Image (cartoon, rainbow, N blue to C red; front, side, top):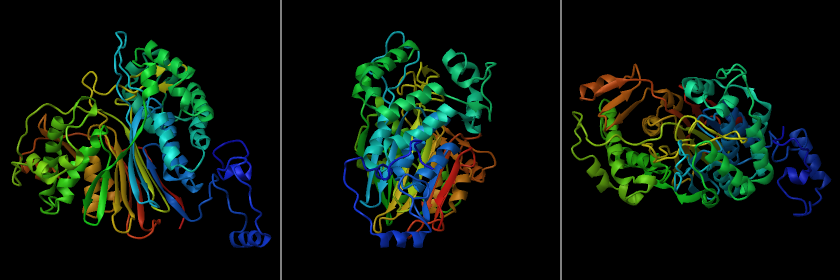
Length: 549
């Protein structure tokens, strides 16, 4: 299997352009040796099965994306290649959470260079909202963000990464369970819009149900144009002008200057050393990342979590979550600007101020405004056989964004953050690497609601600190503590409920929408036996191993 339909020459199949260099003749003895040793010629890069044995691990919230990611890794693509292709697929198969109009944040670990970088392609709010914009929209960020990821860390050609999503959009696929469920909850207002009804309704005007054919010809044509022309014309050119006019015609808010000027940014990840390992988090404006770094610094780096008994830990975590959220109201400004350097905000002195008044014996109520948050998103994680890894979170700042499609493109628009009471892009992935051996240890990404950062943190504490099997850590009951309203939202039948109530926490039982995807490896080279990959059982995602031992 290849990722493009056209039959390629051997040079192009290896990612080498015509005229780039001459192929040297391969001695017949070497060919005979390869044929004898492998039972046939080795499969070229770009063909599934190119990587022999264990190739890596992949997880995401929608199965089609995971299948594509697995095949990309098996075909010799990098984790960045897989993440790009998976994100494009998610824009087709999970448009409630991801879209070409969405934004995101990624952490990238290159094992060969021992470097971790953060890629910020958060979809920024408009600089100016026109009078007729009844649904302010963010600047579409995903295409340029994915192009930046591919250009710096990819190995396969751009066309090969776009094609799987393009094919799914044009040929259609059975409506996934996860998308059907999300669509049914907002069908009435969503399908009142004719363009949305044309995409998401059947011939009778009813929301598409699980298993029904889901075809998106307009989106397929957009992906074809991105595949053949790349992203330049999407952001600056005739196509960009068409997009801007179309966005404003449906009540969104966009200008040609905003499209042209948007650029993804490579940044230093927020690093937190603990023991022999280093945890990395996304910097602002991925507002969940620095919050997670504060939580991890206090609980793990500074030993607060290990310093109490297991019966106290839920109370400690709940107090830490709520106090961190209250503190974020002070350092996170409108538009995602941060007041203070990450080292200062994760420093012991600042964390001591946050936790001042904490009592092991009982809850201390906090005051302040409810935290502003976006309410949706999705995450993916990928690792290859070397231990290089990518973890990404993507989001539209609302379920189905603003509920409008850019006419003739099939692209859903993201809601503008920091507008109309909506908060920041409230997610951020996590990576952990051993500082001495440079071995990959852990990666996770959470989406699905305001409780996503807390879900990511509780899962990491269970898997990394407590040492529970990853499958148990991801499936464990969770809670989400907020400073205002003062209380703890907790999943039904949680074993932590009694202890939290005994320490004065006000509990409200409710299903929490956050979904976590995670990969974890022990010491040594990554392998099926040393590593585990899990997709949250609360959702309909998938986790797969590429290749075999």
